[in-house]
Amino acid sequence: MASSGIRTAHGSRLAASSNGKPNCRQNCPRPIRIEFYPERVIYSRDEQVEPIAIQEVSGARLDDGAVILERRVICSDDTGRNNGDLVIKIEVDGEERYFGKAKYDDAEAAGVERDWKGGAFYLDVIEPLEG
Image (tube, rainbow, N blue to C red; front, side, top):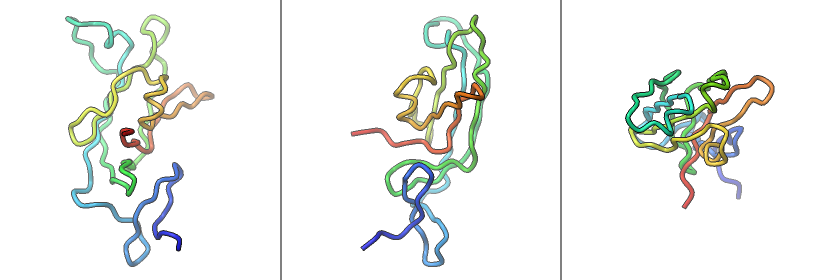
């Protein structure tokens, strides 16, 4: 028997209520904070590095533990050669989910997508931690 619910573009299943509309687990919406930084934030210990951009959104937890965002979060990778690679910090419910370069595989595992044509990184869903 097929399970009920709505499948997202990422293959996650969002439980459906009796009227067929998506619903989420208790304690929704979840506060999400996504910060974008220049690369030097990773290597600077004493220097206070300000984020390039901060996005605060809400999200709903899916059946598989992923969190679907209320809207797409996007940041252009225009840090330039002097600032190195774009770094992203993702927090869900005040807990850090990922902090590192947006181009790394671990970022992709957390839900970060890369727009190769537009030179940007974006998130629609934050994937759960493996294991």
